Image (tube, rainbow over all chains, first blue to last red; front, side):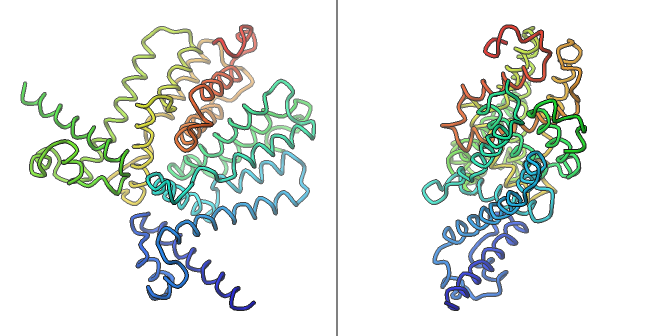
Length: 205
Length: 205
């Protein structure tokens, strides 16, 4: 099905042009006209793939999600020790690279934009809460999770830490840099795991 | 100085009209024209107080900050036991009422809008990090803070929890409701305080 593949490939190129426009000019710059120009397409050609701006924005946002999910799945398949895997997965969500920072910027701009268009967008269910609940459950299955802690509370807390750090990494990149994010997350993972696992110190998962 | 008082009062009314417009129509609806209409003023009259849209938006945002700071100061002056005071202050930041939820919505819309206008706005320094650092320091002075914890790490973590919960309260209000927020924050405050203070149980600070 070469036609279909080309179609999907072209849609992805347009989505990537959309991210670049959002990154440079914010959501108010993400007009169909600007996106077509960035993608090197005519307005008519772009409309062949997306008939409305909202349709294009939803697709571009879905692609951000899919990329993050694919990276998380790859890390999960690496067979790392549980705490190391957990840190590596969380570092695919909190922005510490140019790529993940761009995803965060796009997510933030898109979510603010979508607040007033609830019929078209649903920005709230991005799957991260579920992913974190699974990680906490996995720690527990591996007998690493501290018995005295509540799994539900720790899931909500870690979810808040992840999105709070992501927000601060975007807004205050000089204070909340990659090293600080790794330090905070490493320390937090240790704090919810049993003592006997902590002999090697905070710096070494 | 009745003239000056009237001037400030009128500016505040315009700022409040700005919030209502942002809440209803998002940042893209926050035009000078719409705000004048919401405030019941002519465009000319509004321009007497604010010569440009950005100037008005900055003032409206400053007022959000001032209101939150004033509430926090009032709580701090209440002479509550340290952990109770800490919870009450954090509940002035994480939205659990109609008023604080509106502040969060305005902050979120404003911050997304300001990302691409860095010369005019500085959304990053909202004073909450400093307030949280002070709270952690105060717990330590009161000999309540766990010796084995790092104050710097716990400040950054609590700051992330606060803003993460605020974000989730806004995006998923049915799951992250007032009771859940109180439960998570209470549990977190206990987790950073010494054991001997925890005899009365999580539900009772």
